[in-house]
Every structure is written in C-alpha cells, then in structure tokens.
Amino acid sequence: MADPSLHRWTASDGVELAYYELGEGRPVILLHGLFSSAEMNWIKFGHAERIASEGFRVIMPDLRAHGESGKPHDPAAYPKGILARDLKELVAHLELAEFDLGGFSLGARTVIEAVGEGMKPRKAVLGGMGLQGLQGWERRKDFFLEAIDQFDTAARGNPHWLAIQFMKTMQVDRQAAALLLESFEDAFMEWLAAFTMPTLVVVGSEDHDNGSGEELAAAMPAATYAEVPGTHMSSVTRPEFGNEIARFLAST
Image (cartoon, rainbow, N blue to C red; front, side, top):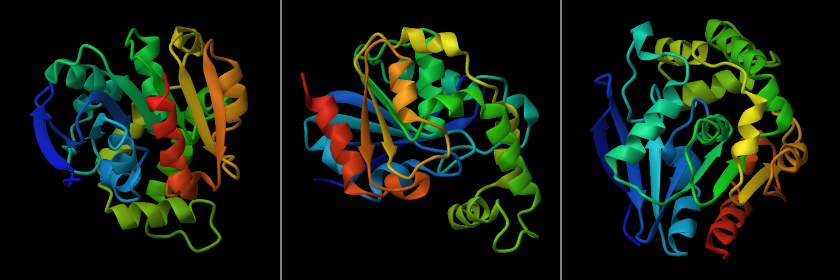
C-alpha cells in the first residue's frame, strides 16, 4: 500500500489546516488526541493501513494547533467549539455525503460534539474516552494548562511529568496549545442521545484517564464496548486498537 498523502486546505477563518489520506473506498475520518497528530495516533502504529485494507479511504486531519496544521497565536482563532467547526468544514471541503467518523481521546470528544450538533456519520468510533471524561473536561483542561505552565520546571514524579515528556516529543507549540485548551468546555450530556448510529467505544484495559468506557457505551442508544490492552498512552499504540476499529467499520 502507498504511503499516506498529505493535503492542505484553508478553514473559513483563514487558518491553513492539514490532513492525511490513505486507501480507497468508503471514507472514514479519524481524529487524533491532545498534543498528538494524525501520524502519531493513526499512521505510525499501522492503524490507518489496517483500516484501509478493509476497503476504506482513511482521512486523518491534524487538528488546529497540532502536527502539520496551523498554530496561530491569536486568541480569536480559538472560539468555543472550534475543532468541531473545523471538522464540519473539512467534510464540506471534501464533499463527503456519507462517511464514518472516529476519534481518540480529544478526538473522541470532538466526535461527540460534532454528532451532538448534527453531524450524521454512518458509524462512529470513540477511543480512549469514558463518561466521566466528558463530564470533567474542564478539570482535564486545567490539568494540561498546568502542565504547560510547569513545562520547564516539573521533575520526575510530578503528576504532569508524562504529559510534559509527550509534549516535548511532539514539539508542541505551547502558546497555541494553551489557547486551544482554553476553548474547551464540558460536553453536553444530551449530545449522547444523537448517537443513533452504530457506535464503538474502545478503551485500554488500564486506561483510567477519562473514566469508564463501559458507562459511556451504556449511556448511548446504539453503542458497543471493546477493551484492548494498555493504558491511555499505550493502548493507541497496540495492534488490537486498530484491529477492533477495522472489524467494527467493516462489519455490516
């Protein structure tokens, strides 16, 4: 299979955003997690290739302030709901009439907002997300803002240490990331009622970062739960993660 191709487009506010594509067939959009990128969450560990092998056109945006996408330092570029708005505009840009939609962690939270606000994918995938994570997003936001503040001072053993190391690995633009974090708010629980399409909630067996994936699946009209090995950070690197998503999307 060919390597993923990188494409660029311009959002309605003039910010240049990027996405990768791999494969041909039914479109599926996959959104990465906070401080990560399409390459890290979906390409590096083979998930995109595994999903594409089932006959899918895998579309993987780099979220605003991440990866190859623009990282503006103007607070006006980060209104409430900006990631869901970018997603809606990307769907329009690509002229997608029917598609599947998935995300990991922040990507899953963005999927929930987009569907709750009216987007209607054929199937949905929520990775690394639990019910409590949606209800406590303001708390998670504050945790990561503290990690940015302590970027140069936190020592090993500090609760923010792992997040800071990941930011360093990903060469995160901290000013842009902080502005994006300030745009987040707790999810509206009524959004979950909009998930009338088949939905997969897939979470690591040791992933307790965002609460219970089983409880999230139970709170949705048509969701199933799958457990894969790993923590929040490691589960998305395991082949089981991509395998579960590929099987779910390919099933009738």
